[in-house]
Image 1 (cartoon, one colour):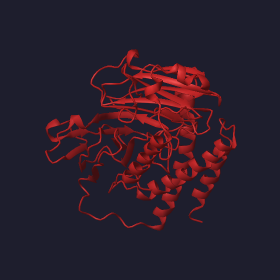
Image 2: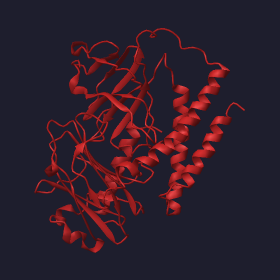
Image 3: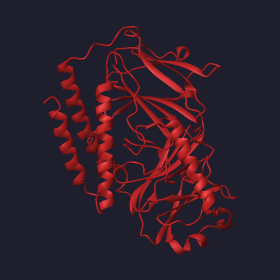
Image 4: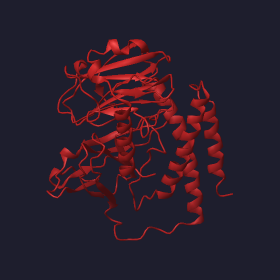
Length: 388
């Protein structure tokens, strides 16, 4: 059967999920099977959309196909590129707080992080008064006047990120064309081509599961539990992006209070993730906050309460019953070096002591009705920008 390589890969990926070392509860396993379903859909989609001659920007992660600790504030797009071809990326800048471009050499695997060829945000390019832009990538030398960026040897993929702070910000538009094939038809698929695509989807699926199971081990779980690192440039990330990471383990009668200065960066976001290295449900629950959503205390600090139970405060991050998980801060579009003073501190307290541990608790409190309005705002904003 033509689909045998894919079905064999699905069976292998299912075994990897079922035997993942972090599984402790039925909830962990159920989440893993949902994660597997999203991976199958994403890998099949990518395999059949892939074209070296007529590239397209596709999304590899989203609410229903998560991977790589997907940021709830970000839309991700990716396209395959070749280092000997020239590409033009055109679009219209939305009103989001950040739009960035990154060229990678290679792929993420369970043994390798791809090389970062170039990474920049839209401040590095000329954008017309009507918000349209044109960016070129190719084998030639850099030419800032033409928004031209070189593709170094080994360049294999272009990643575009559109980052929201206020979730009602307007989404932009973007497309990619290979200059020498624009205006020509793509080759008609053959049976041999179909067989290769099923094989590619299967390989990608197994690699996807193996890879993102490894990342928490590399970058999070070896850190002391219930702590966060100082802000640091994101390894292999954008030049203007910093991150602070950690992992938590909390009992049902405990809470973690994170305190972080309100930043002068255009974007500051926080999220928790599961040990599948994916975001938790950010549509129907507040499992993330950014600088447009979080309440700032009178002393200029943001205080976030992570707990399974509802502490009745605006900046509550819901763990959704998960006693363990990933902690992640991101600063983007920064104009200066960040230091330890810009980073978060963490304190674990008994749940009953949350109110006493918040110096501005009275102003942090929120009613059930106001909380429901916050969740409704998340639901409608995601529906507007992220269709299933």
